[in-house]
Amino acid sequence: MQRVSPIWRIIASKARCFSAVAPTSKKLHQPEIPCDFLKWGSVGFCRTSRFATGFNPLQPKPLDSIVDVHRLKDRYPEDIASVWDDYHIGRGHIGASMKAKLYHLLEHRASECRYFVIPLWRGRGYTTMFVQVQTPHMLFTGLEDYKARGTQAAPYFTVSFYTEFAESKDLVLIRGDVVFTSKLTDEEAKWLLETAQSFYLNDARYKLVERFNRETRDFEFKDVLQVLDMPIL
Image (cartoon, rainbow, N blue to C red):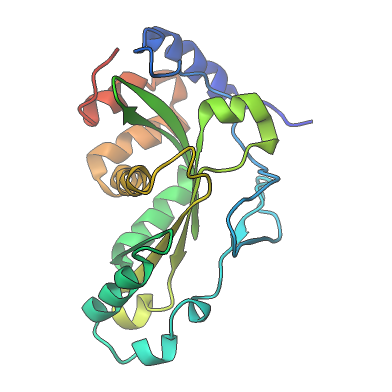
């Protein structure tokens, strides 16, 4: 039996303050921290050994099974990033890249503050997404979906970071897979990835991530809405 983290009890009590959400949105209910997703719908991934938390990480496809690493190793970082982006256009995946220095900052901060919540605006309201960062993976799933399905809930969107060119090119390649297109569009997934990165890489925004993980009783969801210029409904 999983132990329910007190973090969700506290957040849930705060979330009741935002129950007056527009009809197209759902109330913010906070389930226990997901630590073991049992079903993965993303082709090309397989389950591997467990992390200390019990979460089953994803083993991404090797980079050389996606692109010709040998041919890219002599290219400029800008060219590699361009080839990577172009490769993913129209293939049902999201391709992006980042500087190695920023990835290492993300990696360090995620090791200390693994979880966060991000509102995804839709029409006249928002759906709250739960984010789990355990590099080289980043996972997004809906809080309501996890509340309904528990550990059977699968992520809507998975992200993998490839560090093969980090040392030689100061470049980390990013691949995103929308697992359930009925839950999330490519544009929404891209926005979630960029927004999650901003909360971990921007010093001011990261304070909210720290508060969510370390000082949960002081965390206010409305602060996230304000940072993202979303109305408090």
